[in-house]
Image 1 (spheres, rainbow over the protein chains, first blue to last red):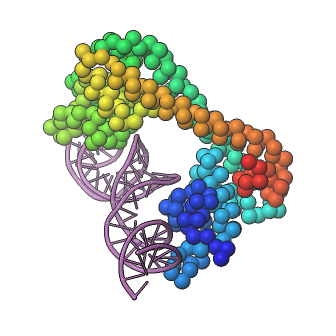
Image 2: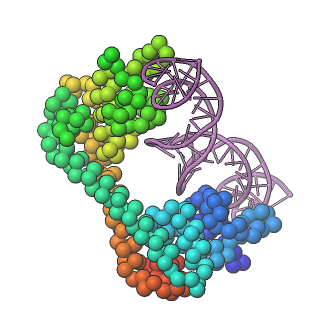
Length: 134
Length: 134
DNA sequence: CTGCACCCTGTAGTCGCTACAGGGTCAAGA
DNA sequence: TCTTGACCCTGTAGCGACTACAGGGTGCAG
């Protein structure tokens, strides 16, 4: 009655069915009980746990970090320093990626800004990829 | 005399040896002649082509796009509209990624800003990952 | 002639999914 | 009752762009 099929869980969380099975194989989501017909039968705890995973993935955490966060989230009494450290690491990683991409964007915009719709021989974009300007 | 070993080429371009061989397998870099001892013997054309590939990779172009850019770069007389389109697509992709990462950064910063170094039970970060605040 | 740095091929692993293939289950409609 | 079709199951292979071996060959300096 109150259990969910894997398809139900997928619809409710926005995580594809295949990905849910993948998380189970990777040990992120506990194996749910099965019905007579060998279908997975999820309960509310599973939905909460999967929502946690999805939120963490949306913030770019890797599966190893999420495993650690889930472990930490289960130990209510411990100080949250480790959680903090994981979030800080993730923030640093995100900032590094933003910096890389921002440099790429500037170079691409500059290339496109100099494009005079010439032939390839005079093309500023090709020229820069060749290394004429650095 | 004027040929380069794969290691020389790697040092001069900053592209690892294994990656050079990978680009050859993928058809991005033409197969060079071999020495008697079956070593690859590169010439200046290879170095220029590899530098072009590296520059394109640094701007985030995928290998398929680079293959197209290399083909276009070889036809000097044709208009550079296609080059322009590839660069525009790449810029759009980079901007999409920046937008995603910027949203992640904001949320992570906000989470960390609210962290009061509590126990996990009261941890703002864990709380948000659980979905308390949206 | 021996050691060492370098080179060769081929294959498997990384991350986080995604896409089958080849089957089983189940509820609704004819 | 039968059949259709949506859903579910397992297991395996593929993606992109490398990276890391294993197990061997080459070439040069001391």
